[in-house]
Image (cartoon, rainbow, N blue to C red):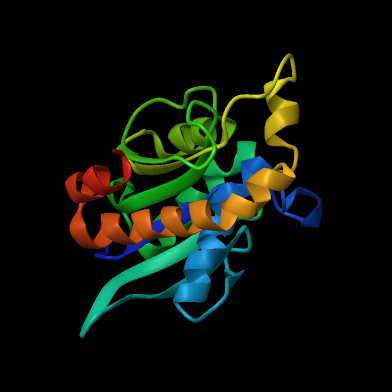
Length: 196
């Protein structure tokens, strides 16, 4: 049986060493959503992910059922744990929302889409390989391109600048809002609001 719940996954790398990196924006958005839902992520019994099950808050109504998750593996191995969660909860790829960093968007921009390639993103590549499809929703959080000749890997695995850290809470809140809009109002409404 396919569940009516949504699986919302933030991509990142586990551990304090990576917590402030650009590559971990997905983790941070999921943490913000968990806080909005009045809980925190805990180890799932499958052992390879942290989760929080609950409902989104909606005025006067019980909101949609959501499973927030993040893999405990490194970014480039996140597909296996995410597939494990989707099978455990019976959630199809068409009800999966993945939050990730995006080099092709300037810092502070959010874009939402369905499907597409991995664009060189190792987390998306792992997901597509494990799921056998790229047909899932993506909330893309802009981190911009590395300055000068800095390698992409070094850039995404580095902390935000001091100026970016001031604006980062706004981007995280916007991304959480985009996920909530997507699961409650659909893709067209969300794109109209966040992609323009």
